[in-house]
Length: 523
Image (cartoon, rainbow, N blue to C red; front, top):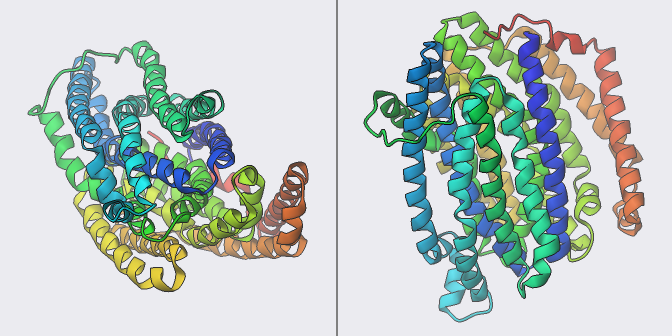
């Protein structure tokens, strides 16, 4: 494999690691402040809707449609054309997202009623949970402008990524976490309802992210005056690609949004339990899956433009190999240490041992889908880099329908945990469909080397899980530990598990050099 591609992935992972650590600190501060109570449910709800739209306009469908077209334009080596394209895409996206933001702010009660249906029903019936609907309506007015800021941030980041400047864009989420933490500590005491301070933290964090990237665009000579370009041929190409990609790349987010609607009927705590477990799932997903996907899409787009089919296939195989070697052990660790990790990271203030126990059930269910979530992130670019968005959208629709069916089947016997199980099952279905389609088209087939590596990783992860199970203290002991004791014992068990994993892989002949010396070409 090209050392350049591996290095890019490690840079993004490093920046993402800093962001995820601060994200856990942020969530620990929120947990201490609000636990899993009604106001916590409302804040997570008010933050989830603009975040969902962010995945569509910024990190998700837009990036998947924009980056391949940008790679085409950049490949022409025509600086004037490149600047015109960036000016028109930024102007067009800016106008559209501004309008969506205005509608969202004005129509926040409608959004709160639509996605918090359970709360709205209780509001109409003048029941206690109706207060959640009123609070959500107000908080959405504060958090919704985050969509505008982060969409333009995503555009700027995509441009920099195409120029192989991955670290800058990967660092920006740190600013969001710093803003929320600062508002929770310094602004929350000024409000009767602390959740408002967190909402303003989201607003401020989005603005800071955008302002941070502008100087880097200027230094690259690509900070241009936005223009409206709806009918421009390049913009039309992006428009054509983005419409189906709205579904194809955002299946997981749509599923989580459906989960929120159902969870609003399941009583206080359900949304928070799912949120806290999802936050721990997002740590390895962002650190490994999204980081690898971030560098693989521009690389595959360049391979496609240069018509290097072998490099294209080898790059996907490298990405699959990387998410397997990182994702399977991470999923095992999350499952085995779900409750201890939740107790250690969040277990103080309003976050009780009971909250940790309930959140651990959904985290264990999510852990089964971690590898599938990662595989979707690296297989979908195999289509988007070729400017094929129709195939993923077809699969996306199937998986959304399947997720809803799984929800209905599993929510009654398993309550909120059934929602997490359904999400994992639909992710597995999505990853399987994407791979089968790539295989049938002759674009990519898992190499024999990767299959052998997969078997070895599974065996090593099983041994790691056994080691964790036999050495980890009982849950009752974890609850009694002080914070320092929790950190010490959790670190000790993780180091032991990682050591067993590493030794097992070495004994089975796996070497890190195999990830650096394959035939992948990063042109």
